[in-house]
Length: 421
Image 1 (spheres, helix red, strand yellow):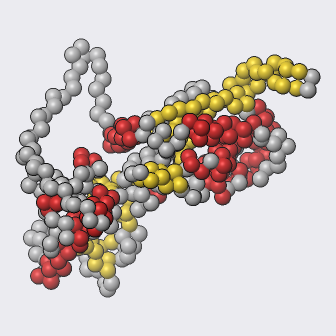
Image 2 (tube, rainbow, N blue to C red; image 1 turned 60 degrees about the vertical axis):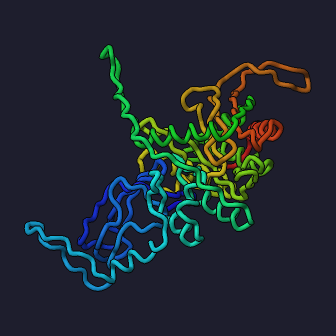
Image 3 (cartoon, one colour; image 1 turned 90 degrees about the horizontal axis):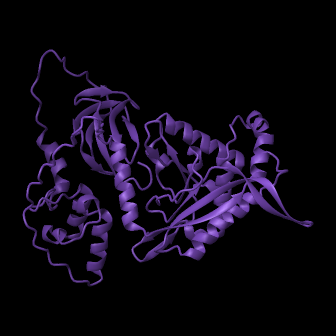
């Protein structure tokens, strides 16, 4: 799994128990945050048993199957003659059940779910089921995450009193919500797909987590427009890559992040984590209408040609649905090109756990005042708005405003005689 991916949903069990498969043959399909992936067999062998079912949400690191490798794999029994499933040997049962000894139950009496990872940490640290009930969960639907239980264990080890388990009333069965109906018959009711549900949850969580502030700057990008117009054909002939405005904008953002590393950060409780690596996310619209954010890893290590290659590759694979989990993980700052849709500015929502996102508006010709040695003149210039939304818990107006101003400065200072590099 990619960095920061904590769980995945089992969407399709491709291989069946007893089936012989070859190395790299697809055996299961999974879905992580916005990305569907195929998981291949690690070696030639036989899939002995699935430990999960379709629809299960599984923590990274948890076993999902038993797979037998080595030796010649025997062919599965003919389908025509149904055979009763063979019970596993006592040794296998003992091996599978041994790690569960002393673990709290998967679901408590109050109906609270605990992942295998949380239960194993609880067993190793001697956290009882009653103590688990008293830990406030920060996960979906109040689930206790790895971070929650480790923080509790650390606090307990430092002498903090263990919280008394709060009495939990038995959960009442949730009342079934009536299905949406169109009274007039003229409305179209669309069920959200899985990706849209995750986007909705991600956006609501971001707004409830971070107090958003947005600063706006208008930049004169005439030099960039003229340079691209003059060099785009030669750029493609020399590098094999199509030249868009995005890599030039990304280059300016990366330079400004170097100057103001405080925007390349995350919040952990009352601590600020300044990320030393610059992993630049680029929000991209998919043909389905959904949104995905592939990440340019170590964006500060690429020149303009390298950024163009990375951006074109990620954009093409995003549209083709061929991104992997690692392609959308680990971002430290995000840019969103709202100008693609003709928008001049926007107030983008921060991509958690980051603390800033920059929206790039449409480039438009406008009359502007230019200072010259002979005096001020009015000329037609190519202008664009930059909209910087930032987390006001840790990024104040001076830092957030100075950063977006610096991005504009780099764009306006673009060298019109720059060679293709």
